[in-house]
Length: 319
Image 1: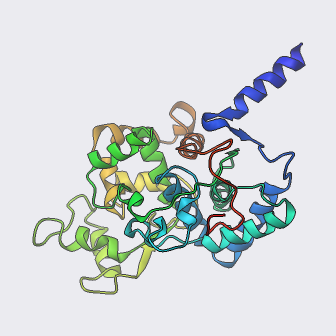
Image 2: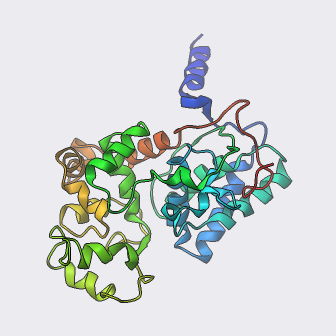
């Protein structure tokens, strides 16, 4: 009886919103996660910046039509063409994994699941936490450029950002933790021009930028300079997944507006502060475990399971 109850409890814990299950492919494609992990590892070895790109791809996929691979479709007026998806990368790595999976177990593993698993593997390869990814997503059959219009944008107010997260069932805590994914990766000077040179109508810099940091940002992104120059989102910690970005946000070293604004609102400030301090992992919320809870939660937004959607043969096109 004890073994039966233990197995029953394990089964119940494995089933989450949308009928996603940890180990969904254990019998139909048992090597699926290993194949994806291997492809991601090879890609990150060639280009360490691809880890952050794959994590960003997961976020952008889930925030438009849910986590259904709609961001991967390549055709006229597809979601990928939205300005709100500008700079997304990692598509070829997703296709490389899909090609191997189609050879191993045809028509079995969805592109949406590949995106979610690749994000997890990217975090692990950046010295971040490992976590179990519930799988069983199916790929969507719709991808429209206009569907990305309501993505959070860099110049949104903190209230607008919170509202967009609430619409997806995500809390202020989730907002802070998912924003902390910026601990790896870069941004382009294009997204800093207003903050550095036109924050107030006509002129001026964002007063929330630490005075010690402002000259550094201006030197990297001069007015009328090359807007494609990239700089780390997490100062001095571009390739390491850690909580240093939260300290940077608190101290005025947040690079982009949306990150800095997390310290302009009482509710998000409280969350940021909860992870500060020497004993934060003992007596306060533990950053890594909380982050994994939030990204698993995000990974369940609007998922398609069962008979809904499809399993694409090629991730960039519908069957």
